Length: 229
Image (cartoon, rainbow, N blue to C red; front, side, top):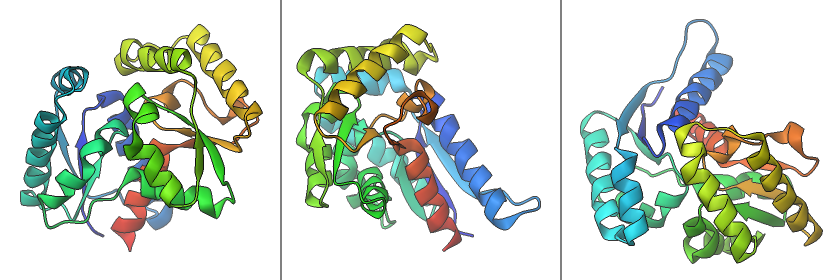
């Protein structure tokens, strides 16, 4: 089994989901007392969030590059950035180590294409929904993307940072998300990419008929495939 390197803490709530999913899948695949070989480097999300808000992506990239080098030194055989938004600097992080970086958008696109989904709604932080680093990468892989309106993006973004990242799960926020999803479905979306690793803490497939693609779960599954390959 290969050792998976996780850059986590963004937020620790979703990083805990990665740890749980990866270990559960390994146990299911291998049985018995098996668990995953994981090295975790967890950053202080308050620092990262401040850099994001200030638009200082270079400084945040340097922080994650340092984490990646630490993981490589600790024996990791791949790198995972356990957050969607910080994939904005994924190429820079990948370039600083000799290890493969398992990209969350590539893993998600592979699942979407495998399910025959060609048009999706994208929910996430404002950075993820409005900037090209995420949408363009999906579109380059044959998946059309629709995003919420500016006002809806503000609602989604604020709930992520002010509630979900703090472990604050509210029914009224869930309903706001579901109303936005319903609107995007009427625009032709065949599925919804939960393009923030915290959103799966709020909504699940049982809440809606449209297929949901939880990127944290997809990314964690990709880690297991790598580890057991």
